[in-house]
Length: 182
Image 1 (spheres, rainbow, N blue to C red):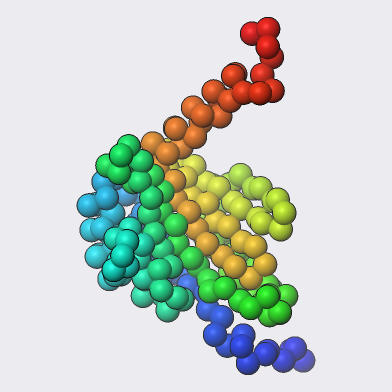
Image 2 (image 1 turned 90 degrees about the vertical axis):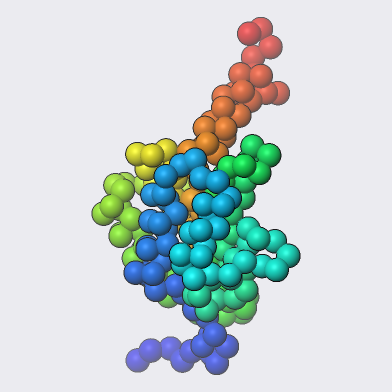
């Protein structure tokens, strides 16, 4: 016998696996570097609309909530750095424990499908947040993230990843914990 579902839980939604994977693949496997104009072309291809106040924030057709996807830029706004998309709605805090198993099942399904295409990811668990990261041959990365009943994905461009790696190397060499005799 299944546990009753609170009425507010009916408004909780997860992007269907096939649709979510289509979007993830489209963004992650696009040619990089990508300009903002190319990102907006992807938005149009997907049938999404931009926020009236910020073109890089989108309302998808996933029926989650307004402004549930966006991209950021680097290099004075000439290159797309990353793309973020919600894969679920936010659940009220009191319903999070009830909906968490549904989110975990969706997270596992997304992970399995991405594993089949991109191999084994790096796994990170910290402060209740679990993330899986796949590095693609083109240098882009896909991050699948869950916390409680919430799911999202981030796709970082090769340029963003290179900058982050360079920054990490810099702080390793010159940061406050670096050997002062170097």
